[in-house]
Length: 442
Image 1 (cartoon, rainbow, N blue to C red):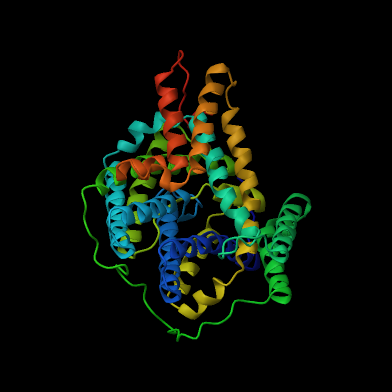
Image 2: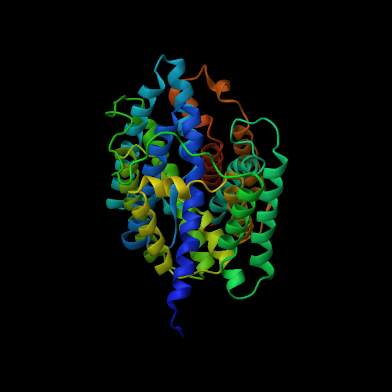
């Protein structure tokens, strides 16, 4: 391979663009969790600090010792669903929000333990054959549906307790969206490579000029602080969290496989079955460690984000070194609350617009995986049933499952989990000949 030397300026710009992507992907969900559990401003700020620290450390560990690909580990829809559902079920059973948060610490620790054991004993590779292109393609489609609503709400200014579209916010968000897409599609050289970074900077400046920045808090902010351990309190153990943690671990493996496949395809890397099995086992084991870190630091558990593939495709950045530098930078700033406060002030509409632009590439990956083999009537039926039921479950109110046991509530209210489970189940039960080749066979 002909490798050209890369300048310091190029590495710096690519590092900052990865850093902005890591940041933008981490900012929104702590705010969402804070609103669900009615956390104070100080508690949300602490959750944000711990999230940055765990996201940076988890992504660094995966990049160096896990699957070793430039894939961000970040808060994801599956864990936000678990947090929100357990908040409701906890109240129904008489538990306070504080009690539920301590139980969630245990859930993250238990999920991490299961994942670590799956990877260490090579159980992950045993179930790898079930994650066919049909499964990963359907997973990508459901993931885009689940998170596109969140991103669109953020672009329209509907994430701050407002029930009406904020026209100025929406206008600036869509301008940012168009800038990112335009530069990534029609720009040349550095304009195309740094489309996300340029779009966010322009949108941020425009937002500050037309709307203004966030008002400063009257509370004193420490210049330096270490992320707090068990900030929600000492974890509480309940037998009901074991099946939830086990099933979440199984579904998380599908997320790990899907992300590895998506980024590998984007990078143009192909693996044989043995290499892919080793990569999945290592990634699963480190994901277990990362979930344990999230429980330890009372953050939101992370999964490998398939949106990393969309970011790479959008910007053309395929080197791993800037990604590693960006994760170290995110870890570093987590120790300085004033910096966390500043960088987390990226306006929500602008951050969501940049993430929405990255998701377009993910839709393409979904279609690509689904079309790797001819779509006969069997495959169309499997995709159609799992997609419609999974997507439909996303729009059901959480209270719809209130009469069911807590474990059923936590599982059935998660559309991504329901849809992915259905496509796996249907494809394994309805087998024709030798269909269902491994994900790694392309």
